[in-house]
Length: 289
Ligand SMILES: CCCCCCCCCC/C=C/CC(=O)SCCNC(=O)CCNC(=O)[C@H](O)C(C)(C)COP(=O)(O)OP(=O)(O)OC[C@H]1O[C@@H](n2cnc3c(N)ncnc32)[C@H](O)[C@@H]1OP(=O)(O)O
Image (cartoon, rainbow, N blue to C red):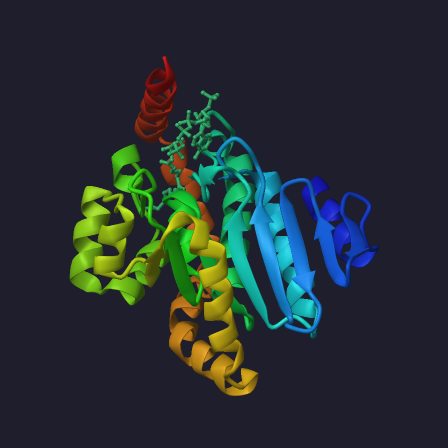
């Protein structure tokens, strides 16, 4: 409830947490975890996730992300968004494991509702979305990229991308799966989902998880040049086409949002699943020591 109130305040009353300023004709607004810079005449915004250390999608981060997108969607001068990260070497570590571990069912339900909301908003956005994947992009990080219309990834073998849920002992929800199938086809998705494959940039390109791999220092310039190409298409025909391609996938979640929340809540609350998450978190810790 507190988050919903914060969201209303941010969105409608301008910005108490957010701030808006003019810099050389460009505009920017920032929440704590999302920075948005818009460039006047081109109608393009660059949205940078900045939730260190790994841009995990905490409830706060999801909320700020959704609000920022909503603001851009309502701004008729904005036609395209480049989605990227301000955290070095990490695009996004995906959903925040600490939101799914050791909490109560009401928290899980609230968290999942916000995950659904961000996904629906991103996946069905009328704007052109291009991701500049400048770091690791597992699970929910990959999900963000898959929502985009075009994906450019940095050519660094340390960076991997994919839906690795099965490695954590959890299961990608049907709408993650549907989007993966839409992107890379049934056979590749079936294999990658079962194995929890994290693809190197070269592999991701080969299988179609990303559209282009470029040297790391060219990710942003390439994303911009891709955006320019997409901006040349009339919005109305591109938007109707996008809607035609994505509507069925989005609708299948919209039709069963409540049931999906219940499924997630009961699945994630299971002792066996909590145990798997505990082990995975321990593994992440041990990696350091
Ligand atoms: C019947 C069916 C019903 C369906 C029900 C649905 C089921 C659930 C579906 C849920 C779907 C989940 C999707 C997800 O997104 S789960 C998250 C998956 N993410 C990962 O696996 C990534 C894990 N992280 C990493 O691999 C690495 O951290 C990294 C991103 C490659 C970065 O490596 P690094 O060496 O630079 O940093 P590292 O030292 O590992 O991490 C720094 C600290 O950050 C913490 N951390 C990392 N990732 C997460 C995360 N996702 N959430 C929260 N915290 C994270 C890590 O633990 C370190 O913390 P600390 O410094 O030790 O305290």
